Image 1 (cartoon, rainbow, N blue to C red):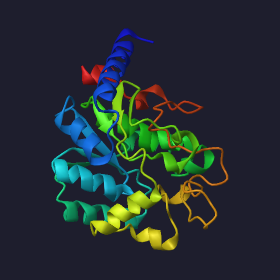
Image 2: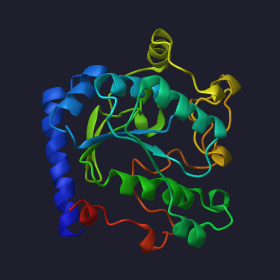
Image 3: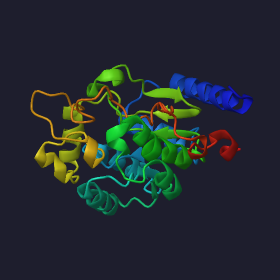
Image 4: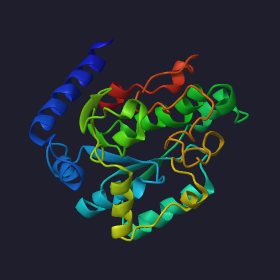
Length: 257
């Protein structure tokens, strides 16, 4: 590992440990405020899919700072309902810092000209359309906020509220919330619901790789159904196999200085 990459990771680990020591016992609004107004002020962004549960975290963020940067990944394969919902939520919450990140058209032309990479190599598709754009969008920031929760299962069951990952500090203020907490919060605050919820989509990603779930299925069973895949990769920041050509992968630390 090159020196600058190791330095970035070491710094993130140190800052995450210090923040967790002081604030790791907090949750929800309190943890989010501590991060936004505390040691990461001006260095933090919220990542949001504007999916089924996203409005809860966005409402908390808007209450603290409606201008906080919010990174939205527009993969080019999202449901039209998600794009409409995004605009509705932005308007309702008064968010002024939402920015879209998406795949480079040159990389798309070189790697997925037919738009079928999701079928042939879903890991490579996610890397092209999600991981690389997310890394580029996060480059100016030292920390980012996610909406992940332990009740989603899988590798998220032991999710900490504060962690260091790939050179960033990640804050997970809703880690200990369960499904009831999320939707009671949405109902109590009169927040808009994603229109696909009525059609039993409970974890919403790209159209080719998302399906509705039945009552006895886990919340993320509708993602990449039938494949040995449970995460898109933005929480791993790792290249798929085969690796997309190096030109498509940003040099994070050099861009960040």
